[in-house]
Image 1 (cartoon, rainbow, N blue to C red):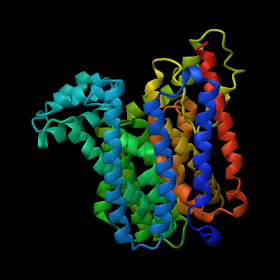
Image 2: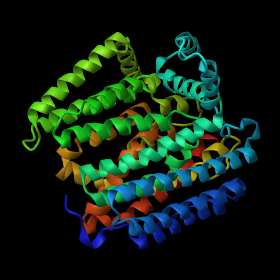
Image 3: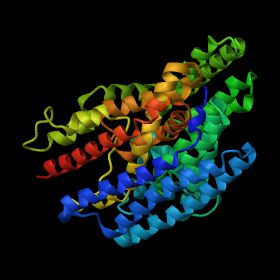
Image 4: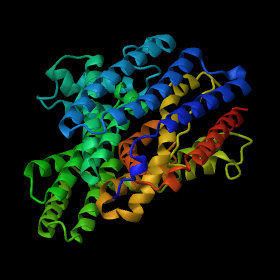
Length: 476
């Protein structure tokens, strides 16, 4: 794809507009609903994070635009480590302020406590095989085994520590930044690699979850490594057994983190192989051979591990009414017509950009939601460029982008169908690949579309206000 020369970096004007928009939105909500104002420590953190992201986005894309790939990847990694350590410290501080009993975990931790408990039980029982009985008795679903096993393994090799697991999360998160930059470079151009790497390095939602005692960081790292090696195989034109082994092991491990994601990744890979088999530029015999090995390996391993029936059960559950979290949650409320509510179609039709940020302290449950509002507002603002990128690759570069395109769209479709798109944790696996599309939108979109940014800001301003009004309404 051709880069637009007149717009080859993140515009400084857009940094000012994004910061002004964000602060204006927060100010208006707090003025009109002063009774439910944003808690001051969180307000300071939210505003500082927004300014941090958009200011450094401009500075880094200018400074690092002409770096060699080797130097770029080194800088991306160490800067990512540095900023993630800062966010880790902030998360500890906010936890000390609002929920000190949860230390050393994050505030209002729920799943984290279960992972800590199960991981502690597994510690010391990895190499003797007892972890199988422990995990089968602890978790109802094998899809929850992965992170508990990982915690037990790290604790067994080193020592039992919550902080150690979080430090490892920062390490995997920083490596993910580098791999996203490499994938964007392989698929599009070195400039795409710079922008994708910088956004991944700075995006608050990724840094936030890198500081959590949760499985998303290692799960996303596995997905990114799989995709990097697949693209490397296809574009390299020669068989790499190390890449094949990493791909197969990576997909099988995903079954123990989140079954639906493992299935989507596997299907996306098969689709990518089929699409590129028709491309004369690539070695068709190699692609055909890789596809056979991949399908055979996944089927054999899945059969041996009894994963096929689990996939079938989760697929059937997807089609049931119980899977739709929105309908279930809203149906418990009285005096609310779901079909006529503004927010219900908003959540469904805007699965690409939701969840929306929440700034108002409506009830005691909102502190934890408000604490990551900076993640949502920065992500949603940047998703304008991801939507542009999706439009461009669908129209002009489908075959080359088929892997990350099929995974991202399929996963977001699952979120929309199940009504889970407004949970930030569930949205997270799609974020790194949406960042790659952001780089395409920033670099390759026509000026006419690029300048629609202001219209988009108005749309999400209205949508965010509507989301707050809906939350007021369901709480009377």
